[in-house]
Image 1: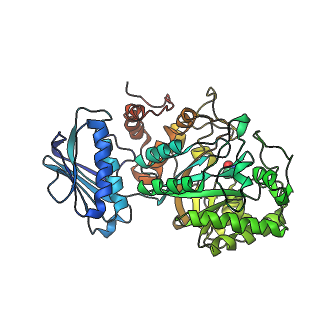
Image 2: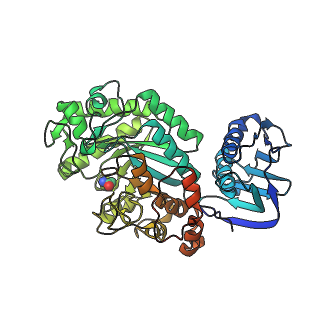
Image 3: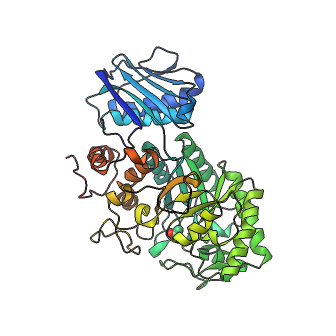
Length: 477
Ligand code: ACM
């Protein structure tokens, strides 16, 4: 078995090898697949230096085609490697994109050798939600960092990028009707780091970039707590908060929107209205976590008023598990993170769930006590094996398996200020989480995964990723 992550559902080795050469060409069966052909060629050109022209036709040694194979589902693919050529086939372009990611991993990270063992792969994901969240509110990360994260995560077949766009420390998206949110509320970040925000054209560019990597962008505006940056930009929104200064600390739970003021709902409708227009994907994340300064009846009122606003914009709300305290619209997706009680209330209401258990997939938690970066409020550490050895279907006993959309790894950025910091906390744990999301649990073995992961050290290094060299992994030199 080659060192693929996530491990494909089926891999059959065949005799012989395919040799990628300076003469190798890429062909696509129909012109609509040209951009996927280009994506494949571009990634192989980087690794090999070969020209790899892309044409519409049948004759290329690397050939991409759409096929009818309903059992593969919306994201599945077939990848067949023979001595005379390689065929990438899928019912949908998404599957072809994943076939390309697998093919890239079948080649070594650097130029030579360019030989691939002949094989047949048939593959499709276990869960349809395989996400990663980046908190761009505590520290701001620019467009280049986000595009790079999209590429890295998509390379491991993750398909959701959730952006935590607002918090007490900063507001990160320009809103035309409420310009001070970004201009003033976006000017700060944790520990006095520089602030920043995305313009609407930048945000749309990011949406399109994510789409080209088969990733759904899910924007989060966290409410009614975690709203200090919004409140100091527009004090009429204030229910409560700690001061009228920009906030750069790390406490939570001190801010709340005014729940009974009309202006709050005008704000929600306008902010979410602009966000919905900018976001082609079906979801808007409304936060809802740690609203410790919002009395419980008011919290329920707020969530119950917020859901129909999102629905009226043609979108489906997602909320952190606390929204389970309110009466939920049946479509509202609930994201479990810590309190099984709240999440169970949502599960009992029958709502769809995303599993982000803090002890498994919180990438801001330290790997071990000696690590400079990260937090330890879970009173446990998360090394690679902790992120790998769990089953999303058994975490919350009340949840039926068909309620569980999938999983999402989260990076809160109170302590991570730079790209290298982010790399270090995300990798290699995201590789583990990606396999949990993709590969059937009955096919996952830690002792096998750790060997495969060891081969991804040089691969991540070649991509400039400053990952954590966990002592659990026998890293290749
Ligand atoms: C969270 O960690 N407050 C969702």
